[in-house]
Image (cartoon, rainbow, N blue to C red; front, side, top):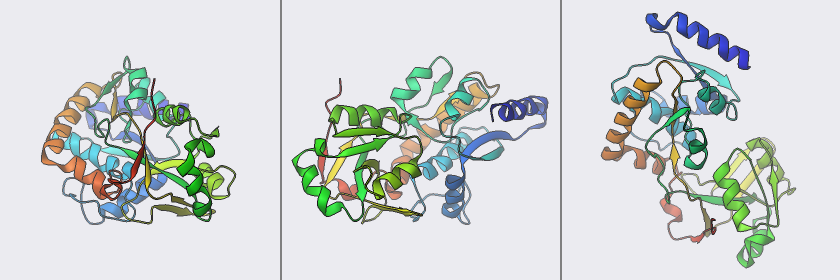
Length: 286
C-alpha cells in the first residue's frame, strides 16, 4: 500500500504542470454517504446537512473542499477509496498525501507539527460531547449501573483516538479494551462482550447505530465531554502544501464567520442541541 502511494505521488510530480488530480484517500463508506448527502448539489452550493446518511466525516469531506475553493485554490482530486484512517497521518508526514479530509484532535496533531500545518479549529474545545453506546437490548440493565458510577462499565476504544483514550482512562472504567476497527467495536458492544463505547450523537432520537450484526444505542440523559479541539492537517512536505494551507485557512475563516461550520455540525448531529440538558460526565484531565 505504501508503494502504491509512492507511485501515485511520483505520477503527480511528473504531471504537476498539467494540473494533475491530487490523490486523496477516503473511507469507502464516507465517500458513498457524501454522494448521497450532496444529491444534486455541488461542493460550492450545498448549505444544509439534514440527511440520514450525514456524519461528521461526511461534513468534513465537503467542508475541506469548500474551504479550499473559497480560499482561491482550485484543485482536482483523485479519490482513492479504502480503509486508510490509521495510515493517513503517516502519508501526510512524508508528503505523500496533501491533506486529510478527516479532522483530528489537536492532542494528536501537535505530535506531528514539524511535518504538518495545523488549521484553525473546526470543532472548538468544549463543543463536543459523545454518547455512551451500549447494546440495544442492555440499555435498561446498564443505565442504573452507569448512574452509580462509570467505573461499573467496561469500554472499548481505539488507540488511534488519543482524546478518547485519555478521557476514558481518566474516567477509570471497569476495563478498557483497545480495538482498531470501529465495526468490530460496535459488534463487541452489541454482543455484550464489552459494555460500552463512545460515539457521536446522530441528528435525531433514538441515538443508535444499526448495521450488519450490530445494534447499539446511547444511554439517554448522559453525555461525555471530550476536552480537545479538532483540526485539519496539511503536509509541509507536499509541493502544494503551502498554498493549500493558506487557502484552507482563508476559507475556514469565511465559513466560520458565516455560521456555516457550526450549522453543518449541528445539522448532522455531531453538535447536538437535543442533549444540551443532559448530565455531563467530565474527566479530570492531568
